[in-house]
Length: 353
Ligand SMILES: NC(=O)c1ccc[n+]([C@@H]2O[C@H](COP(=O)([O-])OP(=O)(O)OC[C@H]3O[C@@H](n4cnc5c(N)ncnc54)[C@H](O)[C@@H]3O)[C@@H](O)[C@H]2O)c1
Image (tube, rainbow, N blue to C red; front, side, top):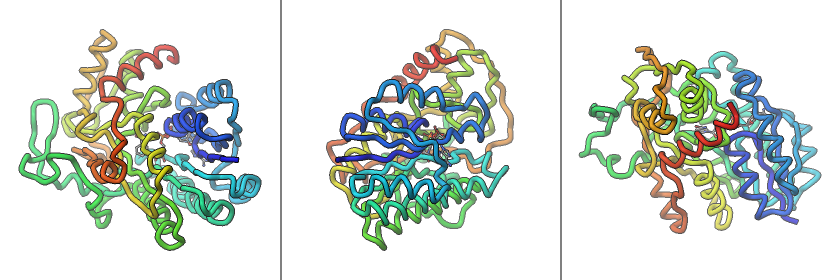
């Protein structure tokens, strides 16, 4: 029997993974305790998505277990053992702002939870492929020291810089910068995932996401950039831009395109790999560009304001260079760009809000 374990299975990337991999595995084991609601309030609950998955996916089994519960996680792994062929670990506290409120919760969920998942994989399913959704915040604020120029609607890197063509690659240091506590807890997990690959020779990989997005995000002010922005555009909720004149650039990758990366890695895995995984030059926007596109899609003016204070750890310009992944897996490519993504979010959000 071929089994996949997905943590955070009711979240954006977890649920996309359930949809994608339920066609490819006999059983999908999902672990999610809806902690997103505890982090960000009722609006951010992922229960609606859990119900959707349970209704639509016959070979799905849900466990309402906290990834920090070592005994609970061990029980799941001991039950399925070597039948587990793939672990997609997405459960996390995902916001930098929130992390500073409860550093213990942030660190135990992100770092210790990942250690528990890795160790249980090693004990019970050592040949399985282990995929971790890391983040570009492991690079801290180092990207903010790149030579940037101001254009009318966005910041852009100096065209003479080597990152201009494809974006920032995995060679950037993760050391000696300000990360936010979230960036630190994720960087700890990222290193653990690499180490289990290098030290124990396990098939592990970190996908360092830019903005991950898609119609099934439960967007909220502190997390889920495009999803939250579109929610505000539809409902007229005031949206606040934090610093950098709203010209900060983020690349946005559709959850499908990211999960399709996981699939390519799974079929031909490597050991302790690291990939930048974002929309790259193919799919990106500044905040004010995203506002303009959302207004065009909804046909309504957005109600937004600007505050000078930027978010700690926010990048002014982030474009992921995905060419390392493409060189390892040349058959993979993007399916969706920023416009497709916004339209999809709009259509699904209309039914939800
Ligand atoms: N969304 C982004 O822009 C982005 C960018 C870079 C990296 N990431 C990373 O990608 C991953 C997935 O992000 P997402 O946007 O799908 O997040 P999400 O919040 O939509 O999904 C995460 C899910 O994990 C669950 N969860 C949280 N803590 C848990 C715990 N202790 N035990 C069990 N379940 C728990 C939540 O209830 C939620 O349903 C995260 O690891 C995040 O750090 C996200």
